[in-house]
Amino acid sequence: MRVTLISAAMSEAARASRFDDGSPLDDHGLRAAARAAGTLRPTGRVLVSPSPRCRQTAEVLGLPAPADEPALAGCAVGRWRGRTLDEVAAAEPEALARWLADPAAAPHGGEPLQALLDRVAAWLDGLPEEPASLIAVVEPDTVRAAVLHALGAPAAAFRRLDVRPLTATHLSGRAGRWNARCGEPL
Image (tube, rainbow, N blue to C red; front, top):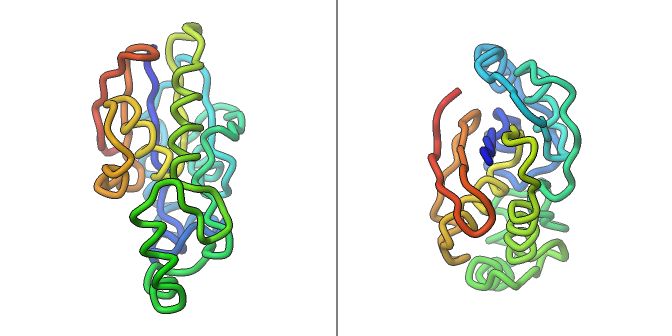
């Protein structure tokens, strides 16, 4: 099985380092995705995280009829949605510290990081053997979760992985034995 995870192009929220707020691609993201259009040759299923910027990235890349895959959604951050890390640190320093230290914490009222990790791991482990390949356009935190699961890395490594916009992360293998090649620019 080959899984190619494409990180979404740049949006205004991503550029401002805000927690995702459902904003579409910005002009830079649109141009970058348009330059990368045609570089991917889907041979199997095409999936997309259910966010505006992921759907828009897939469309601009010219991927054929991607299907929404809820298991690949980014981490829901509740009331922190649309806020910068600095804003949250100023308003809720203890809550932010708890969230950064404990993968099971969800002081924002959204989804704990551990729930994202478990959801993405279950999706990877549940993939059928056919078709033998798929492409998914996803949020950076979904890529991080998939790489951690593929490598058997601890949740603490999540925030240590950088995922740049419009890069491909390739996973090959099957449940229980994945290999990873990360950060290939489109």
